[in-house]
Length: 173
Image 1 (tube, helix red, strand yellow):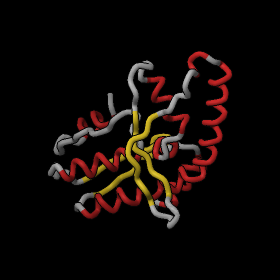
Image 2 (spheres, one colour):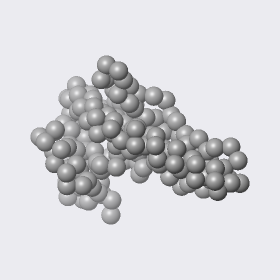
Image 3 (cartoon, helix red, strand yellow):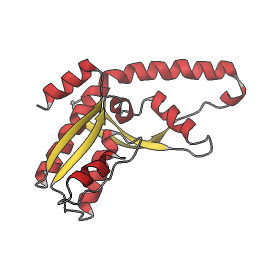
Image 4 (tube, helix red, strand yellow):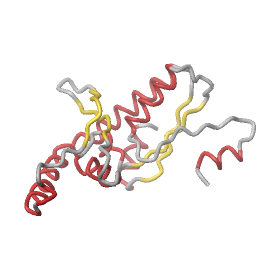
Protein backbone atom coordinates (compact mmCIF):
# COMPACT_ATOMS: atom_id res chain seq x y z
CA UNK A 1 0.00 0.00 0.00
CA UNK A 2 1.04 3.56 -0.64
CA UNK A 3 1.49 5.85 2.34
CA UNK A 4 -1.50 7.97 1.24
CA UNK A 5 -3.73 4.87 1.02
CA UNK A 6 -2.85 3.89 4.58
CA UNK A 7 -3.64 7.40 5.80
CA UNK A 8 -6.94 7.46 3.89
CA UNK A 9 -8.02 4.14 5.40
CA UNK A 10 -7.30 5.34 8.92
CA UNK A 11 -8.72 8.83 8.54
CA UNK A 12 -11.97 8.11 6.78
CA UNK A 13 -13.48 11.49 7.77
CA UNK A 14 -10.95 13.22 5.57
CA UNK A 15 -10.43 13.26 1.84
CA UNK A 16 -6.81 12.33 1.15
CA UNK A 17 -5.21 13.29 -2.14
CA UNK A 18 -1.84 12.05 -3.25
CA UNK A 19 0.09 14.50 -5.41
CA UNK A 20 3.38 12.69 -4.86
CA UNK A 21 5.47 11.91 -7.91
CA UNK A 22 8.26 9.34 -7.63
CA UNK A 23 11.61 10.91 -8.42
CA UNK A 24 10.50 14.48 -7.74
CA UNK A 25 12.77 16.88 -5.92
CA UNK A 26 11.67 19.12 -3.06
CA UNK A 27 11.81 21.98 -5.57
CA UNK A 28 9.42 20.19 -7.92
CA UNK A 29 7.07 19.56 -4.98
CA UNK A 30 7.13 23.30 -4.17
CA UNK A 31 6.41 24.18 -7.80
CA UNK A 32 3.57 21.63 -7.90
CA UNK A 33 2.07 23.03 -4.69
CA UNK A 34 2.13 26.56 -6.14
CA UNK A 35 0.63 25.32 -9.41
CA UNK A 36 -2.22 23.58 -7.56
CA UNK A 37 -2.79 26.66 -5.41
CA UNK A 38 -2.98 28.86 -8.51
CA UNK A 39 -5.42 26.37 -10.08
CA UNK A 40 -7.74 26.89 -7.09
CA UNK A 41 -7.30 23.42 -5.61
CA UNK A 42 -7.83 24.89 -2.15
CA UNK A 43 -9.48 22.16 -0.14
CA UNK A 44 -6.29 21.38 1.77
CA UNK A 45 -5.84 21.63 5.50
CA UNK A 46 -2.61 19.69 5.86
CA UNK A 47 0.19 19.28 3.35
CA UNK A 48 2.56 16.36 3.98
CA UNK A 49 5.89 16.19 2.19
CA UNK A 50 7.70 12.87 2.07
CA UNK A 51 11.36 13.86 2.30
CA UNK A 52 14.68 12.06 1.88
CA UNK A 53 18.14 13.51 2.23
CA UNK A 54 18.93 12.60 -1.39
CA UNK A 55 16.54 15.40 -2.42
CA UNK A 56 19.50 17.77 -2.11
CA UNK A 57 21.12 16.21 -5.17
CA UNK A 58 17.85 16.49 -7.06
CA UNK A 59 17.23 20.09 -5.98
CA UNK A 60 20.51 21.30 -7.50
CA UNK A 61 20.28 18.94 -10.52
CA UNK A 62 23.59 17.24 -9.89
CA UNK A 63 25.09 15.62 -12.95
CA UNK A 64 24.87 12.20 -11.31
CA UNK A 65 21.12 12.68 -10.74
CA UNK A 66 20.54 13.92 -14.30
CA UNK A 67 22.53 10.96 -15.64
CA UNK A 68 20.37 8.51 -13.62
CA UNK A 69 17.22 10.18 -15.01
CA UNK A 70 18.60 9.82 -18.52
CA UNK A 71 19.41 6.14 -17.99
CA UNK A 72 15.96 5.49 -16.49
CA UNK A 73 14.32 6.97 -19.58
CA UNK A 74 15.41 3.98 -21.67
CA UNK A 75 17.92 6.16 -23.47
CA UNK A 76 15.28 7.37 -25.93
CA UNK A 77 13.70 10.35 -24.19
CA UNK A 78 15.36 13.38 -22.72
CA UNK A 79 14.21 14.10 -19.20
CA UNK A 80 14.80 17.55 -17.80
CA UNK A 81 14.22 18.91 -14.33
CA UNK A 82 14.08 22.39 -12.79
CA UNK A 83 16.79 23.16 -10.28
CA UNK A 84 17.86 25.79 -7.78
CA UNK A 85 21.06 27.40 -6.57
CA UNK A 86 22.01 30.03 -4.03
CA UNK A 87 22.88 33.30 -5.74
CA UNK A 88 25.56 35.81 -4.68
CA UNK A 89 23.20 37.49 -2.20
CA UNK A 90 22.44 34.17 -0.48
CA UNK A 91 18.94 33.90 -1.96
CA UNK A 92 17.31 30.93 -3.61
CA UNK A 93 17.37 31.18 -7.41
CA UNK A 94 15.13 28.80 -9.40
CA UNK A 95 16.15 27.88 -12.94
CA UNK A 96 14.22 26.30 -15.82
CA UNK A 97 14.51 22.58 -16.51
CA UNK A 98 17.93 21.19 -17.32
CA UNK A 99 18.81 17.86 -18.91
CA UNK A 100 21.87 15.65 -18.79
CA UNK A 101 24.29 16.71 -21.49
CA UNK A 102 25.91 13.67 -23.01
CA UNK A 103 29.24 14.45 -24.62
CA UNK A 104 29.43 14.05 -28.39
CA UNK A 105 30.69 10.65 -29.52
CA UNK A 106 30.84 9.36 -25.93
CA UNK A 107 28.69 6.38 -26.91
CA UNK A 108 31.59 5.28 -29.15
CA UNK A 109 34.48 5.87 -26.77
CA UNK A 110 35.12 4.45 -23.32
CA UNK A 111 37.77 7.13 -22.82
CA UNK A 112 35.23 9.91 -23.49
CA UNK A 113 32.73 8.21 -21.16
CA UNK A 114 35.32 8.05 -18.38
CA UNK A 115 36.30 11.68 -18.96
CA UNK A 116 32.67 12.73 -18.73
CA UNK A 117 32.20 10.76 -15.50
CA UNK A 118 35.28 12.42 -14.01
CA UNK A 119 34.02 15.85 -15.11
CA UNK A 120 30.55 15.13 -13.69
CA UNK A 121 32.11 14.08 -10.38
CA UNK A 122 33.94 17.40 -10.19
CA UNK A 123 30.72 19.33 -10.89
CA UNK A 124 28.86 17.28 -8.26
CA UNK A 125 31.56 17.99 -5.66
CA UNK A 126 31.16 21.73 -6.28
CA UNK A 127 27.37 21.47 -5.96
CA UNK A 128 27.49 19.36 -2.80
CA UNK A 129 28.15 22.47 -0.71
CA UNK A 130 24.90 24.03 -1.90
CA UNK A 131 22.63 21.00 -1.60
CA UNK A 132 21.63 21.40 2.04
CA UNK A 133 21.34 25.20 1.94
CA UNK A 134 19.22 25.04 -1.22
CA UNK A 135 17.01 22.36 0.33
CA UNK A 136 16.57 24.34 3.58
CA UNK A 137 15.55 27.43 1.60
CA UNK A 138 13.10 25.43 -0.53
CA UNK A 139 11.53 23.93 2.61
CA UNK A 140 11.31 27.40 4.19
CA UNK A 141 9.64 28.81 1.07
CA UNK A 142 7.25 25.87 0.95
CA UNK A 143 6.38 26.30 4.64
CA UNK A 144 5.82 30.02 4.09
CA UNK A 145 3.57 29.48 1.05
CA UNK A 146 1.55 26.79 2.82
CA UNK A 147 1.11 28.96 5.94
CA UNK A 148 0.14 31.92 3.74
CA UNK A 149 -2.66 29.76 2.34
CA UNK A 150 -3.90 28.90 5.84
CA UNK A 151 -2.69 25.28 5.81
CA UNK A 152 -0.47 23.21 8.07
CA UNK A 153 2.78 21.71 6.81
CA UNK A 154 4.29 18.42 7.90
CA UNK A 155 7.65 17.17 6.63
CA UNK A 156 7.89 13.42 6.98
CA UNK A 157 11.57 12.44 6.87
CA UNK A 158 11.35 9.08 5.14
CA UNK A 159 15.05 8.39 4.72
CA UNK A 160 18.10 10.27 5.90
CA UNK A 161 21.47 9.59 7.42
CA UNK A 162 21.41 10.15 11.17
CA UNK A 163 23.53 13.33 11.01
CA UNK A 164 21.39 14.81 8.21
CA UNK A 165 18.17 13.86 10.02
CA UNK A 166 19.37 15.66 13.15
CA UNK A 167 20.24 18.81 11.18
CA UNK A 168 16.85 18.86 9.43
CA UNK A 169 14.96 18.22 12.66
CA UNK A 170 16.93 20.93 14.46
CA UNK A 171 16.29 23.40 11.64
CA UNK A 172 12.53 22.81 11.52
CA UNK A 173 11.72 21.95 15.11
